[in-house]
Image (cartoon, rainbow, N blue to C red; front, top):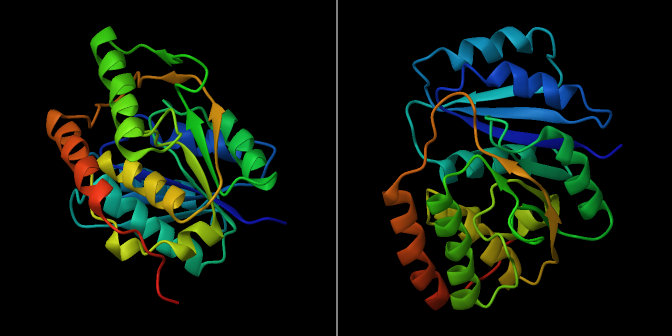
Length: 241
């Protein structure tokens, strides 16, 4: 059986974490979960520890001291997943903006030949619910900008709902990924693209969180904007084996 793990970074997600874990474990497909917990003061880690007693072989957690950024959370999770022999590694938010029922679609896309499957808000028009129109426009045109500058045929370049095949994460030099916020999502896709892997976008409907607080900020967008320029100039090389 293919080993599959969903990485969920958390910071102050007490309203969502138990519900998202149970939603993933309620699917017919067998997914494990790795929570990367960044020292949430609201008790998120305690909730995960309680549920771990119920699912000791499927639910795992790495606790870090403080809020260290989305990119480093996922890289920590990627390394752990490769070390523990997972063949398919997923990224997913804790706040239900990504529907757990779409996980099997991403898995199917990779199983059928994609090396990276992206849950895409923009490959079938715009599929976003509950966002202010200004944010929709900013996000959509950010992806247009990235696609134009980097020459990468991906409609949703900042998407954070993804499935990687293990070989992609083994090939990328994860220690050389530099962006930390949402720019990290662009850098990982571009690196995957430049290393010659096959990318497929799977249409999803993105629903903004209804509970908890968004971690989006203007500085995150600033990093992504300037980071794309720097990324264009860099030589992307595979990890030395």
